[in-house]
Length: 130
Image 1 (cartoon, one colour):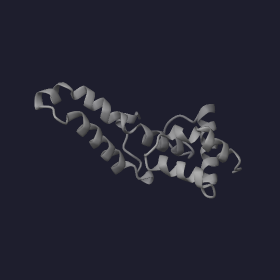
Image 2 (cartoon, one colour):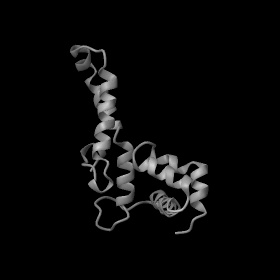
Image 3 (spheres, helix red, strand yellow):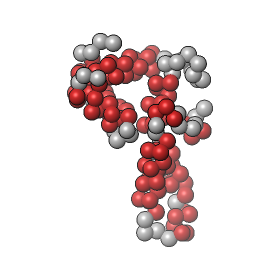
Image 4 (tube, rainbow, N blue to C red):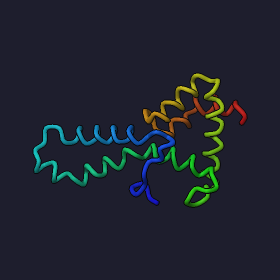
């Protein structure tokens, strides 16, 4: 299943957040434009809307691949490394306020998932053993 064919996994609670971000993307691109101009930019609008779900898609598919019943390919070496890092982030988020703030910013879609790889977060999470 591709990202554009997917339905958001309700476990992560991202459906409404993604819809709100998509609405903002559309509103920002149609403000002050007439119907003909909006129609002419339909492809641009569709691409902008599709891009809004990237972070939620990354979170859901990365975490869902941990479970044996998940459809799709097994995670490769990089996927397993990402999962190991996320396990450390989750463990550290319970006790480290810097990691916790970063994790919840990603989970609430206020930051991109790759922000958990910044040296500040990664080093603090790396100190934590799972």
